[in-house]
Image (cartoon, rainbow, N blue to C red; front, top):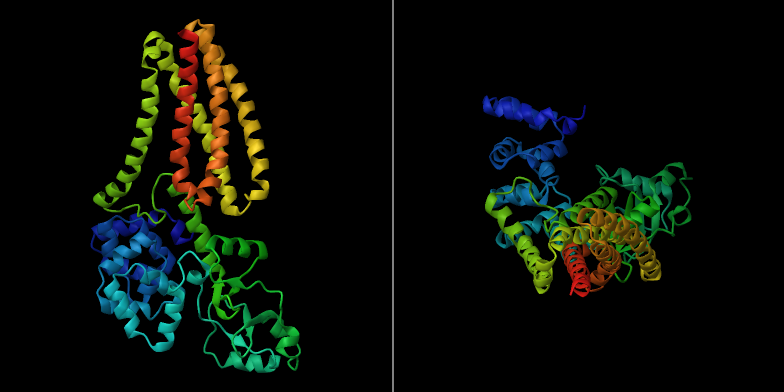
Length: 449
């Protein structure tokens, strides 16, 4: 069984820690487990055990383990290291991974690291750092192998043999002009079965999608999925080759996007450390709780307007949560579907109208169905036909409003440059609560006044 999936692995290490068997732990971390598995153990260890485990990772394995860690845990470990240790680790990292790590370092250490690099590597790193982290430019690796179109396949193969090793995930060579303009790709599998005397121009593929450096990383992931790519070239606005993106980087983007969608709905960072310190966790959650408190006061203010009506008919206070809850659940279903559709690139202006109409019809049908059920229960419970009619109408109204809000909110928020996953659920809850209470208590005021 793979060590990363073996749930007893951490227990074994914890037992070894308690018994002081540090030699056994060091051997396990550096000889038995892969870097990704060591990173997994560090991610799921409490702070004290994490620090001890990291201290036993050998210096030659530190870089490989560090780049597999989540940002929060990586930043925590980097904060305990002196500049010389960071410089030593940086020598083993690829440009894209080093660029990611640089953004977690104090400014002083970052400048010192840049000064310590040779001109070529510093230029490569600064090229990546010049692009936002969530773009193709920020994702790319500048370690590429290029060839000219006028050389023979045999010459290209001789050129490859001069390298000690090829960059990881190399499935194609990039064909460029003398001014480094991207022309096409030459797959390695094509080279191996081609006539050695044929030219690169004759065998290359010119239909390859070159990715613009400012393309969003989520769109890069979609392109890799649609085209089944292993690697792809990255170019600037003048079609000059800058670097390449490989499938391992895209997998990280897909995982981060999934984490982001899940964590943002609770107001948390996708890189949130499960074992973060108490005060750090408290501060992060306090902001979200404060925002929700404001929305709760808004809903309470609506209820306060109908205080006299509630005092006359006690059943209203009992049934109020049902109306708000039904709208909240219905709206969350639509909101989740829309956010997922946006992430997959399925939701566009051209089909937004169709989706809105579909959700309004679904919301109305579900509203009528469950309005009848809840109304029947309310009538039997309180022996009052009026209360049944009121709650039935309120549920239909609120489910219609939930469908409308759940569909439009992600579209509007995205147009405003606001993350729908982060802000959508708060706004949706406020809307369904306010509309539900207004409809239910407003109708009750009309019928019972």
